[in-house]
Length: 276
Image 1 (tube, helix red, strand yellow):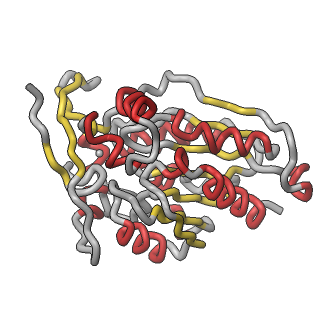
Image 2 (cartoon, helix red, strand yellow):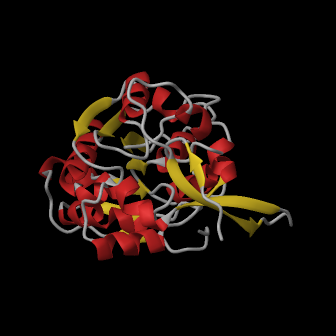
């Protein structure tokens, strides 16, 4: 029987492969005619205990509005490695980029820019936005006025490339719907998402962030007001610290899946504001 570990909000306790294909959706219609000649590519980076398919409702809307969209796999093997992998994706894109991260994906995009002048905006969706020296674990340990219950996570082991054994975490499937979706979708959809979730290595939660890109790149932040995985108060703190243009929306942690319209709107606002 697997041992259940309770960790402080998403990946607080310690929470793919780079060969997986990148989802790319080409442009069709044009929601912002003024941007037609220079519309940026939108790169959507998923977080822990999810995969790129969680962006589908948003990707569809962006594609319909004329944006090229890429949703690369986030390896979830360690913050440094994951940021380097996403950076390698960004280097192969020509022209301006709007870089979007959900949950742990926010920590990844914070470290993936590496001075690339083509990154015109960072958009955090219920995401971690670490400063230098922060880790997911230390951020989750920060006291907030309204803390949330610990996220239930099941540990398992996996072989690392150096021959040692690593530990990764998965949300207990029976509680996935409540933690990530606030039970807002039907049981069969929630069960499928729980089955398809990708585990997060303990290293990803413990590795510290480098200099944050939000200090030099204009940032936007969506607070999920009913988030059960990252405390909304922590989201507000990170958004304020990053001086991000901030919106607050009623919804669960996987808000881009349950509430894609406001998420799409914030991304397109970032594109409209920063690409000229």
